[in-house]
Each structure stands twice: as C-alpha cells, then as structure tokens.
Length: 134
Image (cartoon, rainbow, N blue to C red; front, side):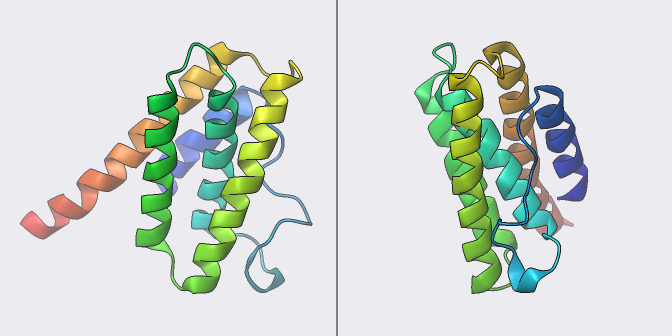
C-alpha cells in the first residue's frame, strides 16, 4: 500500500486539503499513524471533498468509500487499528467537506484526487488476486 498511498497523499496535498492528522486524531497507542491510518485519513478527506462537488457522481463517492472500507478491513492488523482507521476516515471526510464548502478547495483538483484514490483502490484489489495466481 505505501506506493499507492504516496500518490494519493501527494494528490491530496496538491488540492490543499487540511493536514492528514493532528495531535487529537485517534491513532494506536499514541504512536505515529500506520500506513493504513494515514491512507484512511487522506481517503476520507478526498471522499468528503468529492461528496460536496456537484460534478462528481454520488455513485463514485459511494464506491470510493466502500473501497476504502474494504482496504481497511483487509489490511488492519487488529481491531484497534481498524477502529482508528475508521475514525480517521470519518474525521477526514468532515474536513474534506468543509474545505469545499468554505471555498478553500475547488472541485477540479478534487476530481483528480478522487481518480488517484480510485486507482489506488483498484491496484489493491488486483494485487491479492495476482499473488494467488503466482
């Protein structure tokens, strides 16, 4: 997941979404966030921002949300990390919505970030199937 996450993070930063995590974010044991938690926070922000863009189909937003949830369930090392990732996704979605609503972020770059998220989710879906074939 790190390579796909890097692309998604860069995309989210380009559109000016708020920072990925803050000291108040729920991360495991007070440690820095895991890749899964960071991915969930960024995915939430992208999906939240996309939800506020009229140009972006609600079906795409729903599919991206479901894809992020699927990845979280597949990659979480335990229930605690899964819960933390879910909370970070939800908090991120609220921040993403607010960023668009307030005019801090425009929908054109949000569209590009959503495409990056969709590609990352698709890559993660394909990868396990390819590993089983080898």
